[in-house]
Length: 127
Image 1 (cartoon, rainbow, N blue to C red):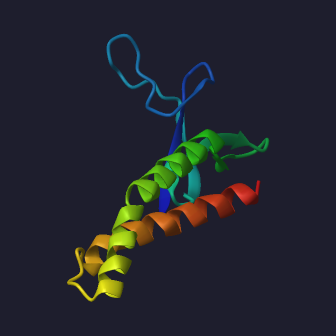
Image 2 (cartoon, one colour):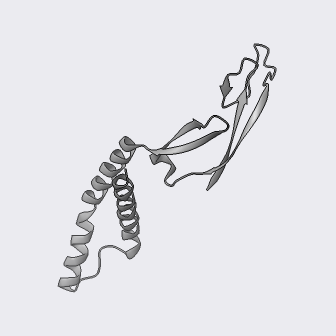
């Protein structure tokens, strides 16, 4: 996914993320810097945008938000722990030859969460 970023420069040279307005609400933006599109690393909520300037151009880099990653890891692990009983009950029904208490669709969310957990752990390992 890509997003565009515009920076608005006021008459005093200050840089803003939105148009510069005077006290009457009039746009007094001196000029707009259009920053090239930049990739957003997924999942976006685990990254923090950092505005960078190389002396010529502004650009955005994304840094991994470690606290958000750890919070998400704890949330996922709690979800998996709280749904482990489903796996146990499915194995019990298989061994006993009784009808399955859950449908395969019930396990899709567990698989998705496990995949997300692995992706976050790999992301943190790169830091």
